[in-house]
Image (cartoon, rainbow, N blue to C red; front, top):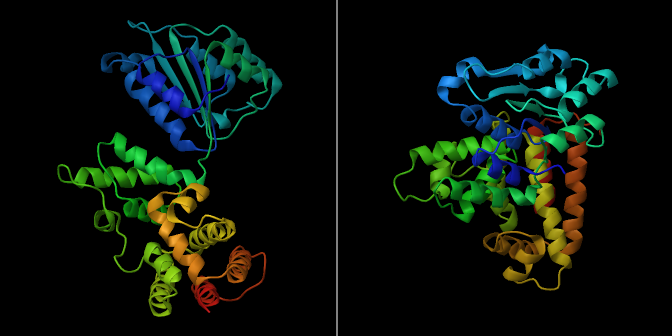
Length: 339
């Protein structure tokens, strides 16, 4: 039965290794975490020189990978063969090549740890995948839903031994996005620079992630919530003047996600902070933003805003024609939301 990251990582941290792994899916972060741990910890430093091979799928066929896997370790109990970008193995889509892989997977060499790391999802119904699942381990690495990212950030900080404030979580997620590798990298950068027992708060994020104190998406959303026309337009003007650092598509997505939740909040009977936090699946700290927004934007207005955002998104993607720049599009949607 294919497993998810949490269970697999818990297992490898105990140094319980299988003879063959297939790590696949559309979230590379979890795949890389498992691969990196095996690469760093499966063998001692002395054994790695002769018994650890890191190869890339595009450079190899299935038979050439099998030739690595079937070698016996030199002066060691184990050898490690890691195939990165396994989705690009030459001929991997061919049935005869899959049969070769299936044959090995049914009787893998006990002294080899073979890791196939694919950044694409594979069909788990295939015979070769089932064979790996029987004698080794198959891990499915799925993209995390956006509403789960804040909890992941909190947990990552907890594992790093630091506390993080709700506002800092929101700033990281909204400014870095849902790229777990980038988020982890930014958190690591912050943790290295923290003083002993210092919490990650908004000012710390601003200082180390390079977010402008006044002109960032967090402050922009706050201005929209409060219908602060002057502040919103000042920030939009800054974004439009710095399009490289403030690309339109991520902002459109953030606005769409936010107002979609506002729409849901309008339909819920319990509009208290606690009620909305539970209903929307958000941290209670952020619930007050939705309470204020539904006060400032009635239901018909929110429906119109979502329609307008989708229209701007189609223009940004080139599906609907528009000669305006991304900066002008952002100014336009801001005007539509506020007026």
